[in-house]
Image (cartoon, rainbow, N blue to C red; front, side, top):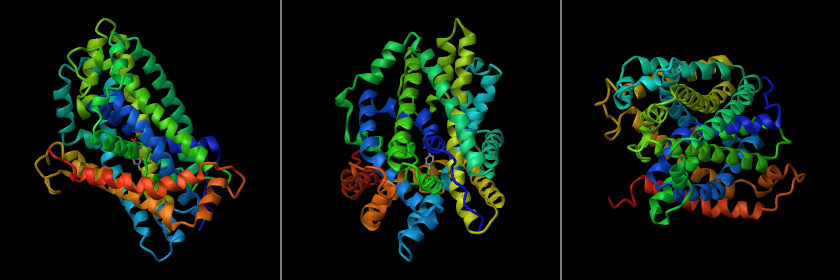
Length: 454
Ligand code: PFF
């Protein structure tokens, strides 16, 4: 087998992993969740979740990946030969496969909105809700855009770890930060900025319920790309001198900062348009924002044009850096099973496209075909991956790193064989052994409706 490629630099490592984490989950899902769970109180709990659970679970994935330098399935096989733990490797690859299929569909919608924004069309959409429904339920166009997203992802992945993933992350992530900063500044100058800021900064603790906590935890896992094999795969390309703790802290900080900044882009804008409320749900960025662009910039259409263009560019850049990591997780596995990288990547791209077609059609011609307990393809894939496999994976990873892995191996990885200090190692062990499995089990039970009294 040819020599395994690694990331070339520490910055490349951080930007690639942050690229996986920062995605539609930050720009689209986080503001939606924040909007429907009362704003500041949700953000506060979210931040606690990412610090207490996000960092330790991410660190554990890094340990598993870097100590084996193998794809996620072989990583478990090597660390725990002839045991059931390998299930987590298979779960990760399977989950990456179905997430990539439905995530590319939403990324495809973004691509369509971007092309509309380029020609100045977003501010001319007279009825954004009908426009959204008409586009997403169309049999052909969303599929063509989904294919385009998968193709771009494919081209980057085929180029390899250093020339493809690392190089593009180094290009796209700074672009993303620049766009976000410009948009935050624009948004702060809008008439509703004050009210938007109040919504984001003044916690109303009466809004906190068990559901807020569990939703925040679920969102944290999705946003940080945890438990899906992606970070474990990326860590397998980390060099032996990479500081795993510092990388995990950096990635979590970047991801959280981006999510909160996206809140600062969206809510001041949303509050600038009186008749729109912040709890608009998943339609927020595709239905609500086009109305906002039109109404808020009524007197200055050029600003509306620039804002819309930059916003959808931000969304697509964020989405592509995440689809790359999902694609790589599966491609790396197939490649290390003996296929050429190109052949492996083609298998992933084409099979995800086939599933993506079913996901896309479930908004249109196949709307009434709901074979999965009453859910169509898109909703079923989303539910299965984000609500079931992700928490199960989180529990397995915590138990594996906390109870099965040799403590010395973990310490060696965290300290790079004693070269780095790890003053909080005891705390990490406590969280990963006890706190993480317990809390994530609660999330899973909540997702399954065990606590629901509706
Ligand atoms: N973290 C990505 C986002 O926030 O959009 C989504 C994601 C990517 C989830 C990769 C899971 C994953 F393995």
